[in-house]
Length: 271
Image (cartoon, rainbow, N blue to C red):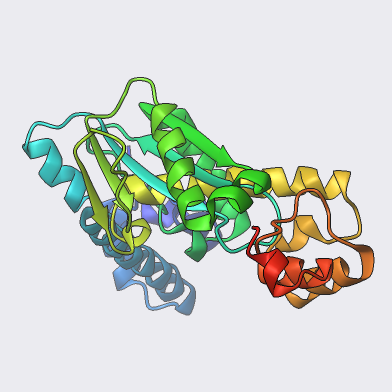
């Protein structure tokens, strides 16, 4: 039963329909539109803006789900998005993730992990892990990166993430890559983390997993700022390497680390 407009103060209307985000009953909206007070107009403006934002988010999510929708119509039921994180850092592993989402799944806010704040990634990552049909993570540590090179390490991490899925996927959507060693039907999508909800979900899991690893490594190796910059080649990190030395978790095949080790051109080829 809708409470009569005359029984609600503007403060109560704001609390219910702005702060709490309740759906505004049609009768109350009509009365709000008839109310000439500035407070009533302000409440209505916020509600209308929220509706526009919700419509825009709905359209964005429909666009983000288009590959999964097409594949579902073709009969694929377990579509896994695959992405990696940590290709550029000087320290720590490359981490990849694979995620199979429920058919028709639309989680508000899911996007390319690079577009999200750390808090948003953590919240969305928790929801994705809870809701996913399956998700898996694959890692390649620095020693292996140096041995096989970073490009191959990224592919290997992705393959390990896919192989960790249970149940196994029947189709793969991969961020701008192909996993030729896997027989699973697949498609590489350029900027996939911004164009596929499954890849975006995988990017969030990969990023949050790697960030957690780097935070733990920061405790093991204080003074390098690993929790802050996550091992990326920012000036603070490069300076710390020069002053404090190279750690076991540093990638010795990467330029700034090579320089800190004083490797000459002939020695560099060994990596």
